[in-house]
Structures are given as C-alpha cells and as structure tokens.
Length: 323
Image (cartoon, rainbow, N blue to C red; front, side, top):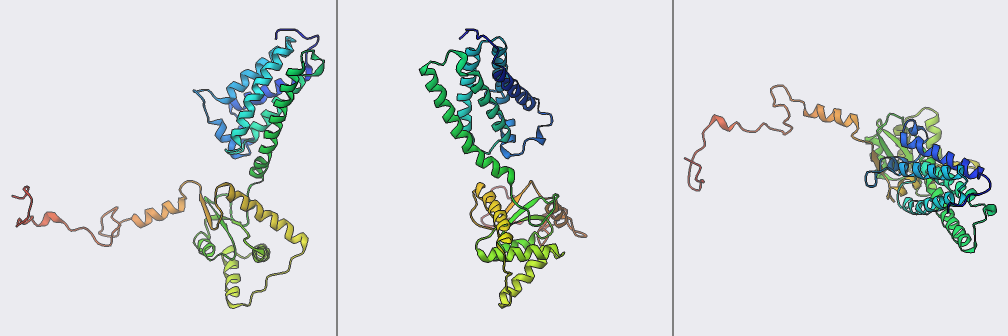
C-alpha cells in the first residue's frame, strides 16, 4: 500500500482537492444557503454521529487522499477512496428514504471522479481481484447515484405557484372542481400561496381559464366564484386548448401533484403551514381582548360566579371540610 508510483496522479489529486474544498465549504457553513437548493441539505448539515459531523469526516478523507496523491502513494490514496466510496454507497442508499441532498450528490460525484483517476490502469496494482471489486463498487455507486438524481431534480424544480406572494405563510394545494377546495380558498384567500392540482381533464381546461382571468387582473377568489357559479347553473363552457397550451399546464400540475405526493398526501385540499401564521396570532389576541368591564383572558360567554360574595352552606352529603 505504501508503494510509490512513478508520477503524481494529477487528475486524482485535482478531484481530491476539489472534494476537500467543497467539503470544507459546508463544514464552515458560511454562504451554504445559496447552494443548498434541496430540503436534504439542511438535514445533513445539522446531523451529528457520536458528536461528529459527516462533513468533518469528508474533510479528513479527502485530505488523506490528496496527501497520498502528492506523496505518489497511489495505492494508499486509492484504498482510502475505495473505503470512502463504499461508505458513500451506504449514505446514498439511506438518502433514497430521506430528503434529497444536492450538495451531497456534488460531493459524491467529486469523490467518484477521484476514485476513478486514482485507480488508472497504468498504476500497476489493479490485479484481477482488485479490478473486480473496483468495477462492482463503481456499478453499485452509479446505480445509487442515478436513483438519487430523480428526487433531487424534483425537489429543485419544486411546485408551480399559481397565485400568492413570497410573504404568505400558508401553502394551499387545490383542485378547481373540488368543493372542499373552494371553501378552503375562500377562507385563506388573502393569506396563502395557491398551487393547482388537476384531478381530471376538466380541471386542466378550468385552470387555463383561471390563469387567463388572473392575468386580466381578477382575484383568485373572484375568478373561482365566477367559474363555480356558472358551473352550478350549467352555463360554463371551458375553453378549448391547443397542444402547446395544454402541455406546460399539465407539466405544472404534475409538479404540484408530485410535491404533495412526496409529503404523503393523495387528495386535496392540502394545507401546509410554515410556523404559526401571524394573522392567526393577531386574530387570537383580538378575540382574547376583554370587553369593557370584562375579565382579561376569559373567552366564555358569561363570567364565572363570584363565590366569595356568599358563604358556602353546609348540608347533608357535604364532605368533612365543611364546618
């Protein structure tokens, strides 16, 4: 393992240093929010195993790979990379059941490139047994890496907003032909972001009409009320769509359906809260405010009786505390 190679593995060293730089960047944690584009990044960032961050382990392993590469100890560098890649296979397998982590996939790709270039054929140590494990490990890693790409791409794409604002603290997923969705839309009209989900072809046509009405300046609640009332009287005719109009709309609602499916929901409406919405807090404070002459904090219809004005009367059946 301490056999020196004739030359420094330049590309193996390069990817080891790139991996080290990427890992140190997340270990320090300054500015990582700009590149943490998936939900799994925050999960990994805050995790500790026996008090040790996974990023610290990555720092150490990439440093050893780079050090051995500089010392031309290519076998030792490749051995560290192989152990690292085997551990990464376990992590990629776990990530399939957890939230996707884009920054982890970038690190994994840099590691794989370092592993490949540190084990070049001209190194003179890849005998048949080692070559078999090298190929097997590479294929397992590639399979797990590709399996993780789909969830990462889906998480990066996210849901397609139909109506709302960045300041909204509530996300509401709805279908335009769902009665319960219409009630939820009325209730959260001014305080939510709205994401459309299509349950049938009629929903697609209505969403196209709804998008047009919003573009013309109508409110979402007003547009939905207008469409619903015409549907109830049988006077509504959904607009015909061309293929070029229909495909982007179907893709958008598929993104939204995938978004709630990842959360475990299969029906709408789906209402998601980010913390406790401030307008609900304000409403609660207003309802708890005392009326003139009332008791602060008492929300009941009547004030409780003042038992201190009249002494308790003892009679048959009273307990021993009664004088």
